[in-house]
Amino acid sequence: MASYSRTMDFLHKKLLQATTKDQEDKIVDWMLAEAKLKQTSEKNSKNITSDKSKPIDTV
Image (cartoon, rainbow, N blue to C red; front, side):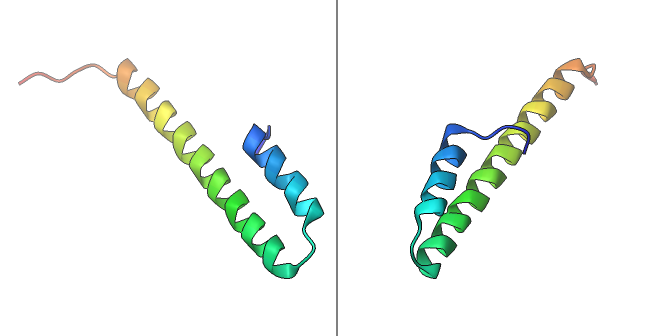
């Protein structure tokens, strides 16, 4: 991921402050979910952009 979102930056700081393995695991899970969410939204925005450039087939 080229740039962190504010959420990822926050989670990274919390990860550094985690004191137990359980806390670390939960924070890493949240970070993975945030990364997947960002990838999905970027993919969807690319699909929307590419769909606009395609000609509409009429029957």
